[in-house]
Length: 267
Length: 369
Ligand SMILES: Nc1ncnc2c1ncn2[C@@H]1O[C@H](COP(=O)(O)OP(=O)(O)O)[C@@H](O)[C@H]1O
Ligand SMILES: [Mg+2]
Image (cartoon, rainbow over all chains, first blue to last red):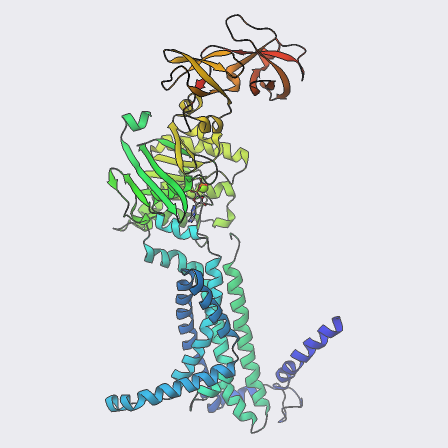
């Protein structure tokens, strides 16, 4: 059993470890370690295409994470006020949204957006001389669609765990509904919202499948990596991959810590 | 009755009824609460005490009837605009704030705004009042249960509410701490002069602290009165049973004697008891008599009915010994015997026949439930 578990871990993490290791290679081969250097990191970071893709990825990830946190929190609050069947239905839909494969979301979003654009564009162009197309907007929309469900699930759990008496205590002490939301509900939910934000950011930043369908002419970092690999893997790609992985891991750890901090003693 | 009839009325329930779907949680409550009064709602779990309190706080709206505070119908006022504050059963302290921030919360909601140092001064005074002077910067989870309760108390009284509502505030404390808190709460109430309304299922707590007690049974008010009134003159079987203990015996009125009546028991003994309500000869009534209202003797006494019963159990309680006696017609009877009096009964054990001495005028006729 132990050996079995061990081999699973080796199978999972060895390739990742090797990529990280080879990114420090001094040679030109991506599958061979030839001395130690950090030259490939320098090369990657001075490559204008990489920087461009990084900017696109970061912008999309940031905007979609913010939108997902705001809308997800609002949806979670609204759901917690609901009762009975409607609530069960929405809960189910949210879990389904998380389980649907990225490729389905990608295709579905693509078809939906193309249909909408086709319908709206002639009219819009006539009115403003401007037309909708794939790009930042469609990337953000597709990512928000998916990551909002993550935020809803995390924030919902936190709301369920919250003592309703706190809300009553606040209103008993003279705070109206808005003041209560600002001073009690929001601070209590903050760790969950923050964790949801970080997860959304990480997801959007790392996503390839959905982005591949709806990015239009934009290049995100995962799309750049994918297209460069077709021209052959270089240690530069290894370096980029290692940096992306490092950043994502760090965000995930921070998300976990925030969630756990939020559940600190006193609960 | 003293407050409702003499003093100023601060709050009033008028035919207040609350239904949760099919559950009737409060059934036509009628009650006046006096300014500066310490009133308790006492009753078993589920009888609607919390519901009554929550309607006053504004967390539940009455289904029917009205609630007045200071003569104003406050039915439409939301909780945050009512001049009352509540100490919640599990305190409901804000975990993301310090002790001082918790206590100052109500003051920070005031409009127009209070000055920062004014708030700080009032918070410090409230914390001093509950003897937590140095604990302001602490986190809530660093406080013990008893301290958290004091924080909850300070957070409420700092707002100088017209009425302070307390929902079983001592239920989560251990016995020693509870007794301490009871005394503290009482002296605080006397000092501040604020009306306190306490919800409790602990009769000892209600009896020792309250000016008046409102006994609740099955969503209704069973009786309102001072602790002494309730103990000495329970209105019905439910109250007699719930407040202290009582022997309850059926009988038939044979004669009226002013405020008293002669009642024939099932054993054909005649006893003289109080008659708080008018009765007529021939009426079937229930009589309540406290275990300490009966005496035990080795022989009968002239002028008293001679009720002979067998000792079934003796429970030693320190100052008192509780006797359980069995009579063929009257069933089981509890008699509380002071240790002093027990010396006159040497050699008594389970199975011994003793005379139950029922002094004239002890016990009373109960009303209908
Ligand atoms: N929010 C509610 N929804 C449905 N039923 C309730 C609600 N609150 C109280 N009840 C019911 O009303 C009755 C009285 O409850 P409560 O006032 O809490 O009693 P107590 O405080 O005396 O234990 C109980 O039967 C309880 O189940
Ligand atoms: Mg209760």
